[in-house]
Length: 167
Image (cartoon, rainbow, N blue to C red; front, side, top):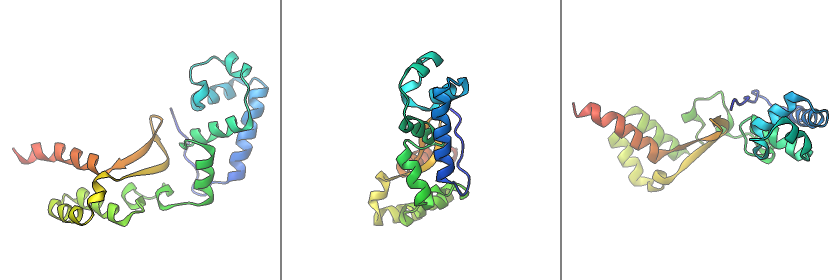
């Protein structure tokens, strides 16, 4: 499922117009609108164009379609992302710089640097980090939001590094 990235300074009014255009496309039985709806609206994943056009389709359905096309699970989340941008939503930054929790960000940096002693010491001070995760809004990988778990990253690093170190 390809996802369109939001521009650096997204315009909510422009996205509202896209939703209204999609609503009109549904009413006009536009095959491109049906394709977009099928691809991004969860209620229409496995239906034909005829079934898309027969089904009721409201503005809220068009908004969900537009939001999911841009990697957000709902219109509310997309709107919130645009109206109140956060560090995690700044797609121009590398992922580790977009982590808002400073303790988690430091743990990721220590892990990426291979500093096992520093990471061990940091995790003793912040044991909650092992179970914490961060979600990057507006990005999806095969339809799921990108999410980082520190514990998964540690396990991955161990699986990759330990066989190399034991040689």
